[in-house]
Length: 223
Length: 247
Image (cartoon, rainbow over all chains, first blue to last red; front, side, top):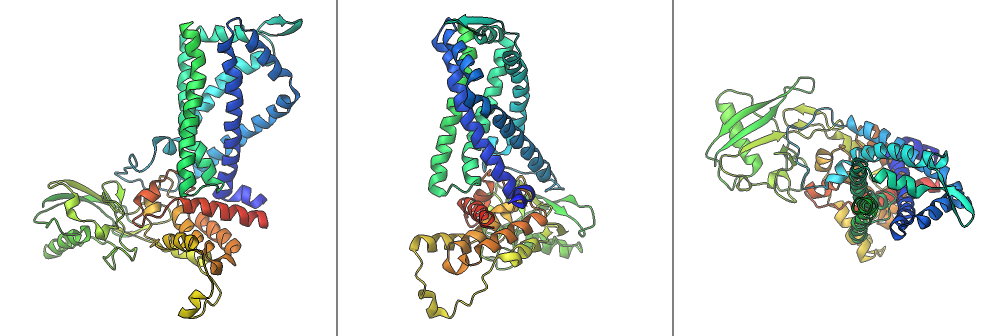
């Protein structure tokens, strides 16, 4: 088993897929929590969600596992991409791939880097602030909690931040449009029939994620 | 028809190659791509020049010997055919055509457009066979095989090992080739016996010989002259996972 994980690209790809699918599930939870912001103008609902996320035992346990998931996904992607770079020492003069494969499938690493760059910014702007204070507090039903709503509305009041956010989310959408079905293919759960279904699901999920997350900055821009 | 050809010329595996430009005229539209190269070579020989070296054998699309990356595509612009079955009518009159050898670490160039594809033989030698005696022709019906399995195995078995999948893949991955061989045998009772050992040995060999990993771009199945589906790659992944879980 250890050899399988460490030595073959097929094994590495297996763990890329498992972590990828885990991150896909995480995104659904993340989006659900985020969307609470548009349902309550006062920010009360969102702050309650933020407080729940910050105090719930299950979420607390999942947090380091999530970080590990990201880490494995990124490290393996780097190892595999670097290895693949050396597999065609002499390049083609003409190499047409435009109509034989999807753009996202050929640029997963670039899309991943875009997401990673945003993730770094995102962690600094949101997670660190929520975790270590700096957002100010608010008291709801006698419980003092971080004022996440204030922080979010302050960030999205800057159009440049909103634009960066939307671009990164579009990158994430593209990444998922390939990653979703590709992960099932790599763990072996696919055939000609299932691939069609999974590719359809991948595009749907990618659109849900891209549109869903983008709603929030757009909501603050038009508000 | 008239064409400008930009052909990769390379003296041997150690020399540095370069593109040479050739003008060719009076090519019948019904000539195959290889026949067009024959006409060119005929002219080159008459002029006392070195003819262009390229691989070919059956010229009827079943042996897997002809290769050639033409205008950026493995086996050229036509769908589901090998280079020998590609006809000049698929090109525009006066078109410039770029002709390159397969490019991959696992397929080093021997001369001009010929590459060494013995890596595929080595992968097959690692496990692409069955060791049991399957008997004579009447014995074929002794073991009933579900029609669906037989069909999938047959589809996989149509792989001619031409290497177009490796040639077109952005990672030079040989997964479609290996998957076709693994899936073909894993679908049949005669092949299942050695399935665990086979998939591990073939994957190990593939990686050792310098082929990239699979990103599931799907270019391979589009360029495959035999239309081998990437569903076989999922089957390979499944077999590989199973083999490693059993161990």
